[in-house]
Image 1: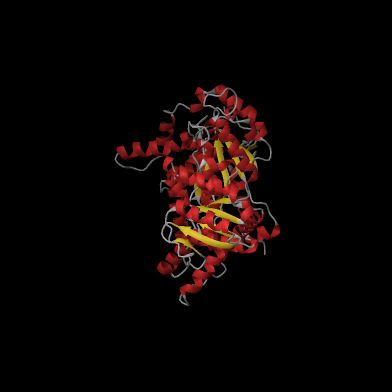
Image 2: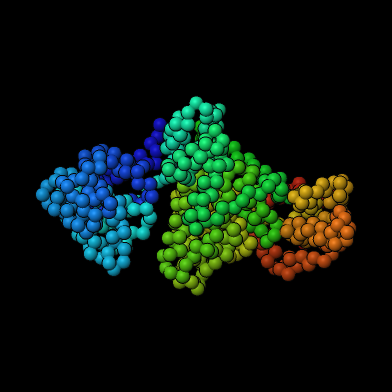
Length: 522
């Protein structure tokens, strides 16, 4: 069995200790779990682990005070560590739990200087310091080589499985067995830390006497809310069946669901990376992103790239990397990046933002190349000319789709799907071919413009005695619409010229009329 991510990280720590690195900075809010791995790393490297916090002072692994020292001040603790090292106290690693608070601002300059001096003095003495902090706000003074910084990974599938088995065992005999659904339960908890996962499993057992994936996913929603960088999107009822048209893209998306099964993992099937969907605004890109998460039965996380940008150099990349870490910890999710063209406006050509967009693009491209997590990126864009060429390179995406104006067949499907979403049967209201007749009055309409006819007709019918809507109501509503594309013929021409580089979201069959002639969409 391959090592877990935490075991791999612990092995890296042991190697760094053997290499006489004096200061390691470990980012993780999980003190108990990470300290167990750090203790094993110290033992593997031949070091004795010791600990300090502002409540207990200096203690050994069992919690016993070291030489009666109740030092609760970080400055005094570092003085003791230095003196002990000079005395030849043996190969020792001091895990400092609260030290990061003593390094903030002007008041922390003395403690910070002590730590930097120790980074030079301790290596020959066989002593190291590990700063265990809940966040990655490392003082810039330590970034020049005085400290090795690392983010401790959240539990992977193997560790979450161990937490699940332990929780099930503690639940007693009355707990309903998993009955082969262990993988589903583990997938639901990926992205939580060990304490969050254990609490979610325990809460599910107490309330339902079983592991309920929906309850576990609710805990993920709280994790996303705490991050403040991403947004949890509620699933779209009906999934991809609620999306009218776009049969080629929907078929491709549904085929990719098989890649996440245990059988596919054993077979060696590659995990899908993502798609870039480009086309006219209002033609179903956003709707499809929301529907994909529903169809795949996994969370939908919206990443607003514009909201992460900052006028300060370096701040945008920091926000992006923090969001990336959150996404990586969530396991299998649909990561929806809406209007990517606007997010990276200014990243190429003359700079108007001090290079902020360019730096953000670089951070994003690096992550897309190197990531190994299961997040599926569903990115949308309206203006292909605003996208940096680097984002359009082959291999960056599993597929690039072009969404054109809906065909008459797709317009009829949109009318039927929207009518059903309003709790009505389109066949009863319009007849077997009624939607086709309505669609013929919607030439050059976007999908959103076609869907809006249902609501417009419902308002008119309600005002007319709360009667049911009719095809005439929709046709009358269509006569009042000025199609969006009429105001941008040049842009449509450029989009369609570029579309030869992408795969059509609508199949050739859906774009072909009864005579076999490709339909004119304006």
